[in-house]
Length: 222
Image (cartoon, rainbow, N blue to C red; front, side, top):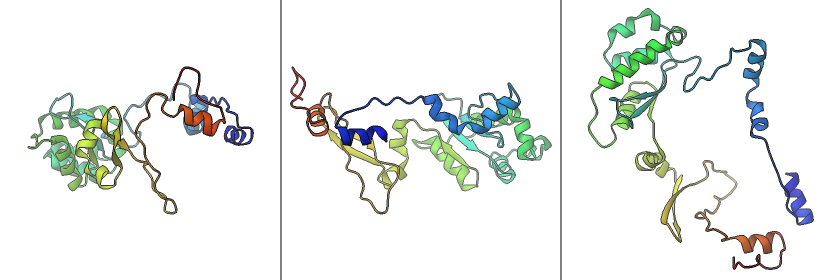
């Protein structure tokens, strides 16, 4: 903010450097305190959640590109998941009766889920993982398909329905899909979106209109 104020007042730029570590420390207070009180107790958790199991990303049918996200926090969700895969033994296993017990036996739980998804019938259609996730959602189990950017655009229709994805013309790449802002403000109109700039496209505008510099750099037109 100081740099912006100085730019408006003095018509000159500033160099702003921010340490990524310093800006992230404010989010790590509880873990820093725990590490100080119990050295070695804080370790990377990956996709795990300390209070939920199964919780993570699981491969389906042994395929490298088919992954399902599960987030089973409540005991009733676990019961519904066991019923969905028709595994009465897992539902009755006392090791998995509560979230705390499932977390204590996380390796066994993850192994069960991996085996379930490896052998579960593959849904018909072009988006089997999305269909699998929808089936689980309908029975009350939090699930979602793990998508890459291409599949998000292709399969997640709500992104189009919410007008989050916009197609804009680019002078060299043709029509390109861009992300719109992920929020809307009730008292403000949506910002105008532009395609990605070409190299040097706005140099003259920045120099003349923002920095009051006479002309473009020597040897360039823009």
